[in-house]
Length: 196
Image (cartoon, rainbow, N blue to C red; front, side, top):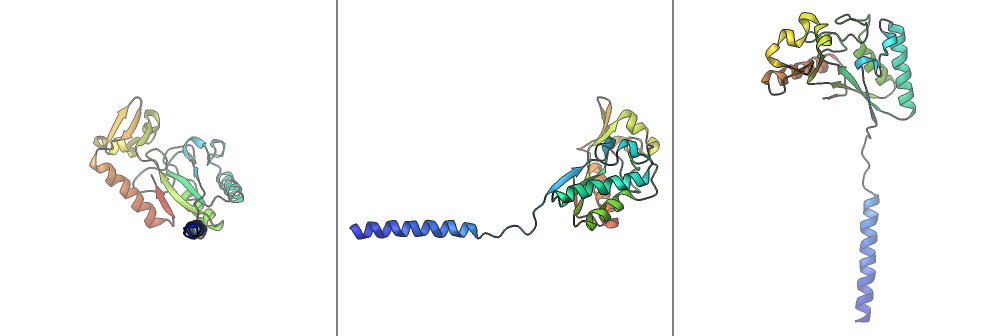
């Protein structure tokens, strides 16, 4: 009996070491995401408000941001591509955001989304297009888009609440509209992902 209990103890210790040893050999993920959100609304991250209308300053600033992020091993940028019912690329669906030129619908002499993708890929980083889905902005912001604003074009699809406009989440056309934006982006740009 004495030998049987010693055998069981040794067997138990061996089993524990095998289980513990196997846990050490689990394959690590092929790619670890180290991501940041890069906001374009109101000059929070890029482009800064003081760079409105200055293409060289905008591009230089983005490169500086990306270099800093690369230095700390960030490998994925979630770039705010749809700001508030407007976008940062030439679109046939929604107007161009005012954050680059200081005026609604006025495009700079470059395509900000294409530039950001190119600069991320140069650094071995992924760029994911981040779309803000439901908020369209406060009343003044939306009115700045005039007839190109979503409330002007599709009023039944939008709701005004406490001084701001929103896409109506329960309206069937909301999903269709957002899907069209995604289709437009992925068919024209080499993005690595889409985020809502």
